[in-house]
Length: 533
Image (cartoon, rainbow, N blue to C red; front, side, top):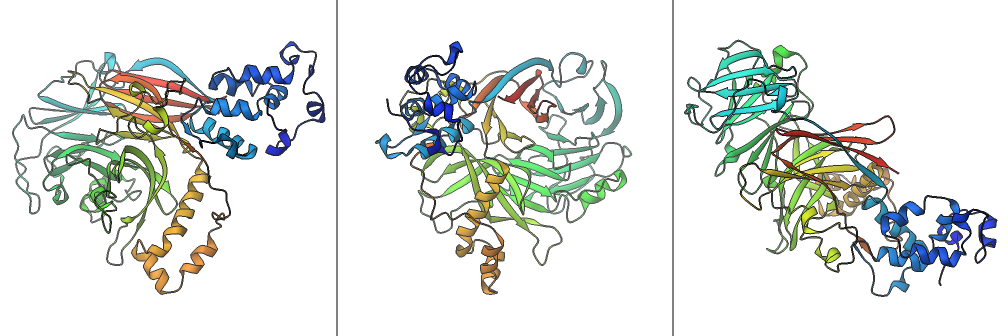
């Protein structure tokens, strides 16, 4: 059987291991078999068992480095290998296995935890009146209902809900710029968003948004705005994000998303919260319009792509990490992790996103986009099958990023059948490390600087500063690196299918170094522990 020494992989092994290859290695029963028989056994293990066996002891790890064994194990994973496996050298083969084990989470132990109460079940629901004619929204320990044009704020942390404030819906006495009157019937359909502290309530109908301070006087005025960018569509979802400093507005047309406000600039003083939303940096400021992010300029019809359901995740570099669906571009729809830069124009007081300054950092496969990896039927782990893969058909998914940016969870609503209660599937992806994401960002920025994708890069070239950009960023020599001869599909782990719409997802760090993931819906709170073994 073909095999190679550990030295070719840059791994330091004891001389005793190299001297004992075909005879028993120690007196222990687990390592008394000849090396060739151990490697033969490893070839029949499933991939997760093989990954675990490599961590038992240094003898088993040495035995797992066999070339033929690794080829057989890689053949069971969703990986595209060259037709001639002999073209891959030992070092490259081991690198492929390490990358596949990390990306496909072979060493991550996912454990389901007991379910908790949902946002509107059991004691938290109490005597709240909810139904087809009553709109409601929950954030943390606070719930708001709109019943017959009356807004009520409840504290739902105890067994019985406690009323904190009430006020009428302010829709009969105000106008909104060039928009229509706010008058709406009591049965009108509303979209609601409640801030994390339970103080601000955003109400949307069609293309008009109101923001209420629920702790202010009952007859106080609100912040109103007619969203002209939503022309031809209607508002189908609202979310407060970035510590309540921005409002994520989801539109009905092809998953378009607007971000209103300025991230990280809201005042902490309660009496000036509405003043922020009334200012030019508040509700009237368009921070991001996902409809403007595309490569349609200078592209053919087959190359044109667009983003749907975009969600900003956290600040990163000189902009934000985001997740979204990518449609078009002569590819099947799939999810992407990307970076978008922002800048402050000379005639503006607040920053805006540069729609052409977009970099894709990681690709997250859907069922259709992963066919090249899964149609061969050799994936014995079950990853990539239709029942545990996202369809990338939902225009408004929800994402949550782990504290170390190495995992992302996706909530995708099921639209395959009409059900009285919607179903939401949760998928967990493994992402590259933050350092690798930053290196990828710098590498792609350096490669695209000559294309002048933004106004700032154009000025840099005019002023002769583009050379300094290359000197300031320490870049790997991409040309000298060997091109990868295979491709590893970034497939998710399907966590569960939840009844209802998931309203909140969050990660928490555990003392043992693992992560805890929680997903809140109206029916229940699902939790998982994630521990790298």
